[in-house]
Length: 208
Image (cartoon, rainbow, N blue to C red; front, side, top):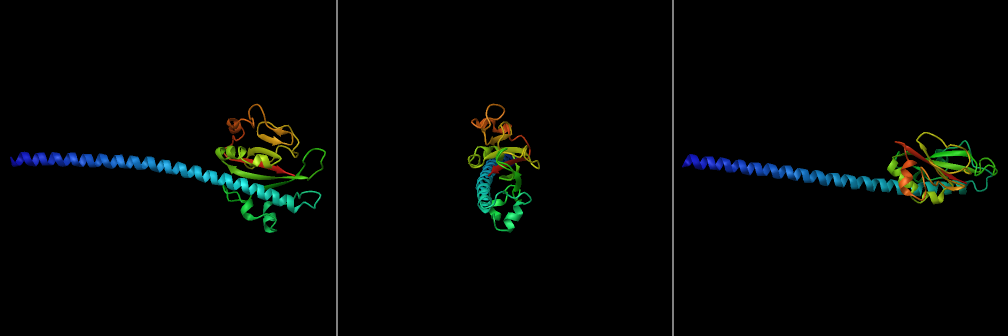
């Protein structure tokens, strides 16, 4: 009898241990799913924060440069964003890329159109953008604020030196309007991925 009871007790303990192990594995699986969901949500939230910060920063930096040179006949060519920050023309907060923690790029020596004269326009460059961030920026408020928008591979410059060109493809907006048709149509946000094709995209925002 004692032997039977001992055997039953051992079997019962094994069942309990098995159930406990199963419960632990289930709990670990649930925690893993929750953690993955939280990480995804945090990543999306962080991405949205970067998009909002870039949108506000580029607008502020562009307005500051326009205001600073409103009495001048042309925008400077041999300047950089760091010079503007050091001279307090542009705030460091407005001109810092939250994605790379570097200052935005500045391009001088541009023209609003072929007959407007040299150096009457400039551009601000935002580099290091993943495709998803690039797409969100094209669909945000900045296109309404800038006169020219082009997407290039980070480290590359503008295709030309004037804003008065035919839009299309990666040249999202110009003085002649927005890109239409194929491969990029400004009226169809599902095509924006065709502009943001690089692993590290840069968006050039032109002002005058």
